[in-house]
Length: 132
Image 1 (cartoon, helix red, strand yellow):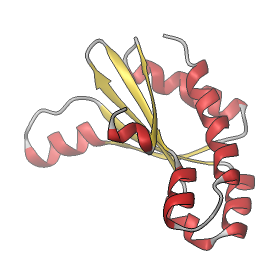
Image 2 (cartoon, rainbow, N blue to C red; image 1 turned 120 degrees about the vertical axis):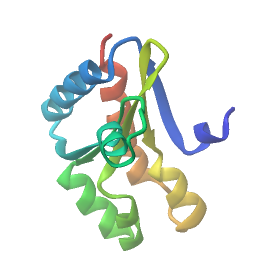
Image 3 (spheres, helix red, strand yellow; image 1 turned 135 degrees about the vertical axis):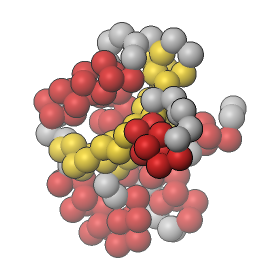
Image 4 (cartoon, rainbow, N blue to C red; image 1 turned 90 degrees about the vertical axis):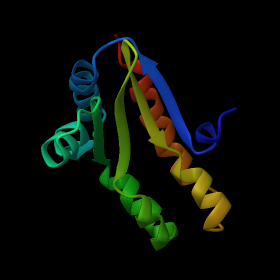
């Protein structure tokens, strides 16, 4: 197990980051998640450094009910909100990653991670449903 697998869920999809992002946005909306913003890291790096960079997006998503439940348990969980999903070009495909807040809740904040796990599982199911 790679270290990143301890705190993140990862899936590689054989499709372009832009296509994956479009499909992911649609599926998130269908499941009552709100896309608050996205950051095009490639564009920012290239514009400000002049160096070429591979496609890399950071997507901030929120489900208001999740925020209410998590913050009701522990305000420090707000450090992990909104939920982040990262898409990056990986060979011929796109790697999609999301942080496992439940691990941080259990390991560092003294919680049991159950509420965070519930919403992580929703996000994992959405990511798993994205087709190439």
